[in-house]
Figure 1 (cartoon, helix red, strand yellow):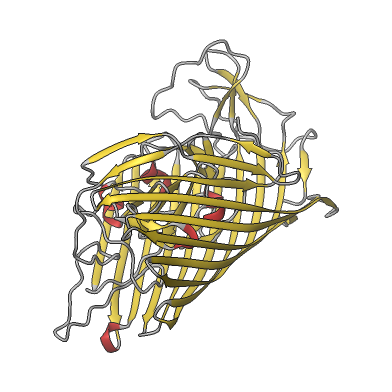
Figure 2 (cartoon, helix red, strand yellow):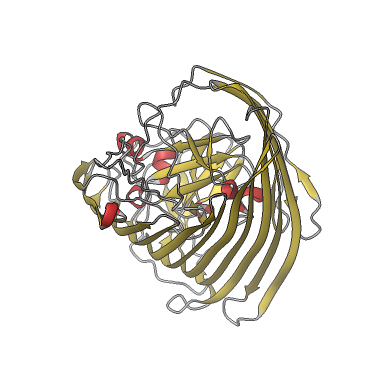
Amino acid sequence: MQLSRLSSALLHIHHTYTAGSFKPLYCLSASVFLLGGSPLALAQTDEATETPPSAMFDSIVVTTSADASAQGLPVAYEGGQVATGSRVGLLGNQDIMDTPFSTTAYTNEYIKNQQAHSVGDLLKKDPTVRVARGFGNFQEAYLMRGFVTNSDDTMFNGLYGILPRQYIATELFERVELQRGASAMLNGAAPSGGNAGGSINLLPKRAGNEPLRQLTLGYGAGDQGRVGIDVSDRFGQDDAVGVRFNAAYQDGDSAVDNESAKLGLAALGLDYRADKYRVSADFGWQDNKLDETRPNVTLSGVTAVPEAPKGDKNWAQPWSYSNEKDLFGTVRAEYDFQDNLTGYAAYGARKGEEENSLANLTVTNTDGTGSTYRFDNTREDKVQSAQLGLRGKLQLGNTQHNWTLAGDLYDQEEKGAYAFDYGNQLPTNLYRPTAHKDNSWTDTTAYGGNLSDPRLASETQLTSVALADTISLMDDKLKATFGVRHQNIETRSYDYSTQVKTSDYDDSEWTPSVGLVYQPNKDWSVYGNYIESLSKGSDKCW
């Protein structure tokens, strides 16, 4: 982003509720920001290619949109790396100079320039994000403002839980929209209870105004080959119908000894635009396989951190692996009842399957001595996510109101099974690993269900309704946003083997928000907000 001035003074309040008793856990941090920006590029940008669209001789211009909105995506700044705005939950697309929340939208051009292969690869470049792994596995996790945002809680075009849970390849999305801070009023509670420090929204690819025929070949360190195709075109009267298809395949070894990965994916994006309505649909498939991937290291009882091993050293066991396969799709539509009244609806679903055999290393001496044990698990997810809402504009005297009324639904059914042989500790070393070829289960193994036939482990249902209004005053120099969401969180857990219900949780809460933006001129603005994060259980703020 090209900025002429940027300074910040913290006054941004983040408030986390723990559902149940809903006693507030105050995690206070943040910010009144003074933002200065370079003048915006005035040309409309085609969000699929980040280049200005072409106009037909009769002055009709087709503006494609990843989110099925009439205005299309916010244009990119000069240079094409970041956009001038992004989706801000139920408020819709907002210019960064007009919203009281801290956001950044990375474009597809930036993704390509960084040669990023996943969401984590891209966000490593953001100074406010640190990328980590999930608990004991290879799932991506993102640390923002001291809190973890799990990849489970990533949104796809505003819908939770639709994209693959552990690893999301960049071929599946057009933009990465990063919103820092809590967002319960804007997006609703996150499925896994995260997003207190920030949220991530990924936008699907769309056909641009010009035909696209792209073939990508790659070769990486070790022996990793990659091939991808990306094609699109528009059809019909005024090019109203758009089709975009992209697929990729990756296979081979990495730069780490004996480590290999295989990835296959395909995605189809469709859109149709008429005078009063717009419809888009996205369908995707991803199959990600990891073999003998270098696992996490845990320190236990050591007085100092051991020296890091060589970069190509691998202490994974030869039988360890992690596989994930997902099939997903979404449909989104908008209809203009009047010039100042638009209704919208969206629905998405995902079916995911995971299985892995893990052997994380615990180091107990600074010379690298440690041990590992076998831990297997299987998981199947069925997720549905939906939205329904109305957006309108209302002029009352010199005051303009931009209001939104929305309802959200998230439903997840998780099946799972596990087996871990903690009593059979296998000796090894961080620097001189021992490969244990025999990984047979022993009498000390603890089982939860049947690994080959996982049964119902948990159910989660999130429902909410929200109302927000942005009031513009003083010739749009002052904007005040007020919003509130009523959120209900319902979860049930079951014994992996007996299917007896082990927990049943059902509670709800109101989460308000207020934000102010003052923009003396187009080059800078000062803003602040109050917003809350919401999760169930006994989450801690430290």
